Image (tube, rainbow, N blue to C red):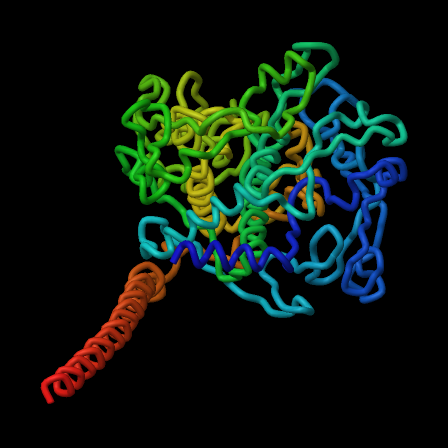
Length: 513
């Protein structure tokens, strides 16, 4: 079954193009850097941004001028400041339900040639999926790891290193999976201040403040969309790992996300496909020492040793009671809107505050952070954490808790900070490093608008169908197909035996005569 999925996916790749990532390949050249314009031609009508068909137009980028907090005191040093102006000041602005860097795709939740079909997909519990669905998910992950993305490249140097007129473009190919690993690194990396080891570490455009949840929501939506494009499986959704009240890594088995190697407890078992994966962007100290960016090349095996972490840092995995308390916190952000925020839903869910009091704590990691530390390996370092595919299962469940909070408190957009949050986190800031562009505040809203749902948040009847009946029927269908195939083979073999026997009897009769 998995082999068929992979073969089918390879065929799909011959004619399907992806639509997510960092720098669009058509804009990764000297001319685009010189003109600061990223308005690719849509193949559907041969015009920039599909303008002839009314899909979008090439327009100036207007960034928010609202002040950010004091955590980052520099200006004009980091390419991520006032994203994406260091690279481009004109991009495609898509109309209606159209989306993508060239407006050739649809907004999240919309499908069809005219992007008029609205559809709701359901993200389900990974452990409740049928065996074939789990195998398909793992096959898709491995395919993404070994497939170079056709439409996007990563940045391997700063804009200044590329020259005033872009005469030295510094971009590199990367696999579909590693594109997203690189994006997570790039959004959270230190600022290079000039010279070896001279960095500003107190900066992160997707963590430790308000954009943590909206940014990762868009990240997961893009990743989901990329897999659909790559495989042609438009029913695909990212599953989640419900780790509430867990005492160990229940997805860490060879038939799921990889067990522990018997030879080295820090490695993945050779019985798992993930044991052969090579990580990228896991050596920030080395990059900083060279005043360089992650090159996106392989750096060694995926590391994971769940449970053998510092018990003083993580005393236990989050419980149901922890989640309930955090969801009950009414205020999204408070105070300086950073890791010191008290009674902040975001800070509590991210894991810088106690899930019992809501007060900021030091020296401990809770909630979201607790899982990362618990994994005790590649996933425990922010910049390289997305190398571990468990990252996806974990963050999908974090997103579902974010959804619980949104439904319970129904906050207006005005509850999201418009100014004075750490750099990159204000409402109007464009998310780094996405092209097309997305503002943080636009994703301070429920997931149904974005075309997806969580199975455990459905009403009981629908949930039963999604989590229990559907996997059962799929397994039954596979068993029936196997039985049918076995029956056909048996019939063919029986026919061969009967024919051979008849011929033998006939020949024997002739010999006797």
